[in-house]
Image (cartoon, rainbow, N blue to C red; front, side, top):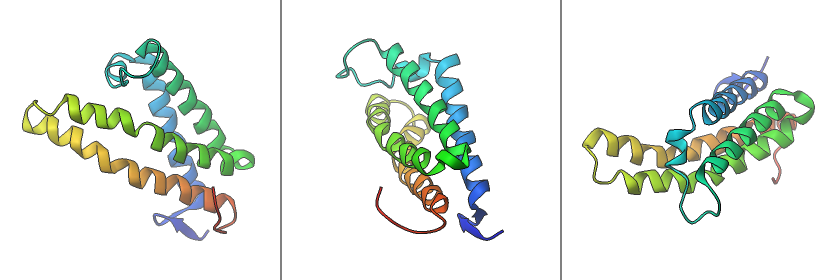
Length: 136
């Protein structure tokens, strides 16, 4: 099987991405407290509903990425989801700016991590297209 996404086969990369999304979705639903604190206050409604909503979205996107018939759409949605949660990472970095060095490193380190996640999702999308490139 040809390797194309970070040295892995298209299917392996897709299943790994689906696993990451599913794990994140499950933790949003089962341990929502830490995620609630990351929800920007500018968003309407209660933080818990945003946390639950993002968990459900992650699970739905994970399922779409895992299934070959919906992989292209799911991977596009994953890229959008990874971009959409960036404001929460910015809020975490801001909220943790006065904490100790390790906490600040974790908070600031999360910011650039969104880039390879988006790249990964787009690579899975390209793999679902049979390697063809194209717009989202």
